[in-house]
Image (cartoon, helix red, strand yellow):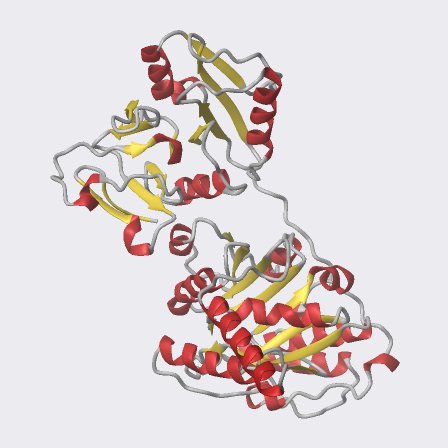
Length: 498
């Protein structure tokens, strides 16, 4: 093959890869996804930061938001992002280290809520780990890094930012270089390194000093730090504020603690201007101690009653039936589920199978009795949340956790997941008369305890699936669709935002 044809082929392949990455069609180069810990300081920016992270990070991201101030309003974010975990501010504790203790993925990202990401950000920051196994921490270019990685740019719109990043990736795809220290607003690292050196030293007060100190400790353990030449993230800059004297003194104490910790005497420090002294050779210094990652005593996990039903007889052998039930139980990640199976014994010739003490199998005779049992099961078993599951539907492993948290943290009485392609649009969104009854797919519904959700019937079109006509007084919310679709005006229940 001639050099010109080889060049054209490589250019086309690179263009195709860039397109797939830009459209979010490429999986991450890791099997278990990534945990993103977001430091929440600016309420005006936090929602958009989390929204962009969800849009541009793929399905395998786990979000943990940490309030960095006692006045930070967590409740609106918890309602808007039911799939995320939020840690409230607690005086005397550094919440970031608690969040890191819960990270269960191979890679972790620490990000400030002032950061705006673009399509492909996380994949491009993970590739250096694949390129060289000695790489254990990676940062993008931004206005908060030091030296040549420090870029102070201005963009009028998100589209301008995306265009700049796309252009940068096109020119420098795959390029990165080693760095002596990282201290910016976005840092990606391995969980293995986190477990070896621990968390961040909050006695240093200033975030950049904490990150720099953590990276220097990582280098002492042989970790390689690198900067991505191809990837840029935009960090919004707050307006300068006059610090109270006590806060200013605390900052100075942090600077002095950093200098003393690394034997830097009285060197000048001004991280806002990119001035941060570091030891010339950390390998000759005694290893600095790690910072323990401690989980706080976990609050009780609310009990969820999972009501499992089959709309039609399953053509399974007894052994296959038992395996199907075990698989449905085992695939859900939520930690406190009571399983209740409701069967029509005239139709479901299924064998008995072992259940835990808190679980139950309810056998009734006839379709009317079966539907009545489904409508009233919440009154039989006390729990905070009731989730309906169809034995013939497919659910991802976080489904119960996601919809249960939407009920728990939201203001709706009943929540509908839009995740299933088979789900019908509610009547008000189809231009039908608002006086017509709303019919919702039972297999995608959860509700608070203590209520009768409404009337359950078979879907008239298919004759197989079940549908719920909710009580008019209930407030209904939706998850899984675009934000504007998760608002439904109800005649009596009011408007609910999730």
